[in-house]
Length: 178
Image (cartoon, rainbow, N blue to C red; front, side, top):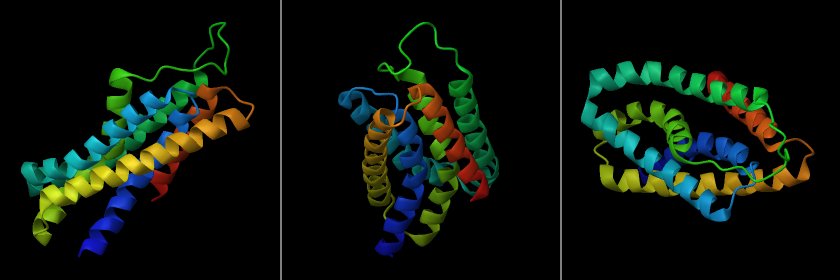
């Protein structure tokens, strides 16, 4: 059973890793990268718990819609980043990613995990332990994605916002396809 939970945690963290590549391309400080990875990890840990608390019907209803809402939010962030006008600043300068932008992105990426909580309740898995494992896996995968994005941001000759927009749209497309 723990093998299944580990694999589920890795599957849940994959979207965070992909979105983190986009954020990492924005050349933020490593302290900010860690903060973002922590926020992503907390959301991945809490959403399945919320799914158990909310209950089967609401979780099922929210789960069906949550996937589409998450995809729409990611696509909107991606399109915004692509279309954002650079206002005389160096396009390759360090970008601040803070506050509600990070929280909204983390929420969008983990909304579909509400339904996972109900499934965990049915399996009689220790929820706190599973949530902690999901959070740690997501934190690690998000931080790895941020580092890949940091490297990509310096290796590719494109503005950080444009690269972030492309990766967010790619992530939304993969979520739509999956």
